[in-house]
Length: 213
Image (cartoon, rainbow, N blue to C red; front, side):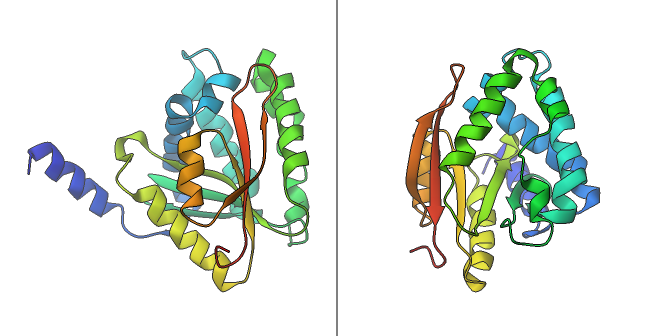
């Protein structure tokens, strides 16, 4: 085994097991999420086409959202801050009304000329979401340094086991066929698809019933 591989394996092991995200994790988790979406997801380039400050803007947006809403009203899990899942609770859950709008006016303004397209995209996806109570996977992201090492699969499987134990269905949206296949292997199915406005990427809305049926 090469020294680089040994170091990577040691770093991977040091991240530990899935656990709830805490305030102390926010900065690292936000940085990991920002790096993943800035450089490895088509959504990042669509909403922030200038690469010069794309990652920096996303770090602040993600950190603020985690602190302001998700830590108190959502559900967040992490593996050492390097891989994180962020869940929106059902509308009927306590605090669920906090997520009635995905973003506020101030956040849309950060995206500049892309703000209007992003707002239209959010409204489009909201209209494609399934009716009724369900948990919505707002974000899953792995620090690019740990990509393709199984962290995302391990964390999502952990989360879905919780959903199943509580008899809860869930949904999400994603943007690439590779991602669709990843979720299909875990019981999700595509229920709607569209093209995001303003030259945006494809979007696929996926649903999973409790038990992966």
